[in-house]
Image 1 (cartoon, rainbow, N blue to C red):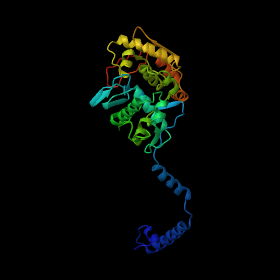
Image 2: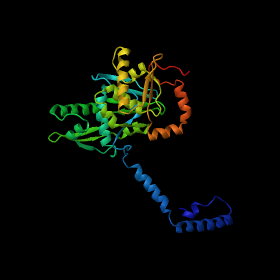
Image 3: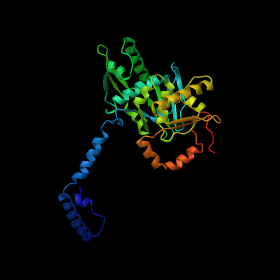
Image 4: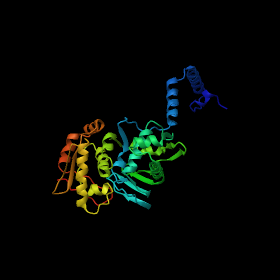
Length: 337
């Protein structure tokens, strides 16, 4: 068997050349052995290996807001309907372009979003595969709900719904799909109503593609107005809101109102509430084309985003009539002038 220096020798049939090569390679080999190991490189590899095995943590956000995926806020996944329908087969929901959302099971509404936002808020500092713990009474009070016997049972139903309904969100730009439930599993002590809940690690994909800080104080002031709550989240997710037709907003929020005229009346009242709580600065519905214009103050992160995307150019396009579209549904947009 060849020694280590012999393995490094180049192939040659000249004995003298091989002798010279052998001495040179042997010397280099001995110098390499005497050389100190590169501790920093080894440490970096160990750090990388350790980091790869660490559970992924949710994105952090401050106490006064709730972090919600943009795909969730820009669709009918959490609709404004009081009555929840049942999708026995995979049902496609209305959403803006760039997403495709399917759902199977009992559908969600804004009541469910309040709960899910709160649970995510509690767990935002925890790794995805670590459970979060809370007492049902404390959670109900934080949500502004009652604490009677019926409220505890309703909470059980709400959490069960978030666990059992299966959603599929496809990000059309990356051709990736998240499929699963919004709560992975739970353990509950019936005597104390103490809960332990965990989220699937893959849920992070909903946040990696973009999420929004939703002002919780503003949302709670909207109370039971589901349309106002949906609009609040929808427009908060836009650094510079596009103009959507009334019919498009009706589709996106999952409204079951038959007459568009009635929905338009409700929309006006909801926008007034958003302005009252400080969520938007102005709103208008153009009587000629039914396009809705909304202005709001962008968050600091959204302002930085606008600056990086040449906000001045975008503003010109916006004022010229750029409108939003539905993904996979009949478009209600007006072409840019």
